[in-house]
Length: 90
Image: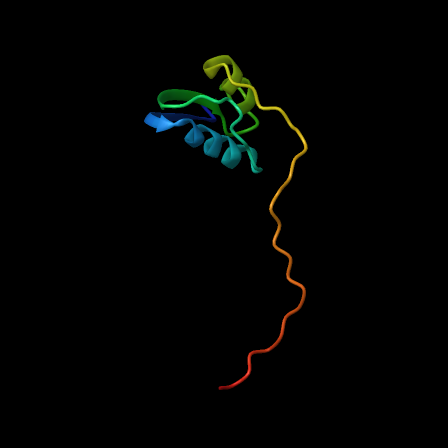
């Protein structure tokens, strides 16, 4: 493993697992628009620190797996709390 980096390795996982990894690393929603089905095995080495010998996550994703993350606008589910009340005794 490169200094300051992380290696993610998964065997026989749906592509949605890779999207969840990307969402966790990028700290935001990631939608799988690849259309790829089936189970996949992958290994990905990427930086977890600013000073690292490993490439940044998005660079590693593109260079090592051939995937590209693009920022787009879309609908996001939001929960809105209109009001709050103290519970009453029963």
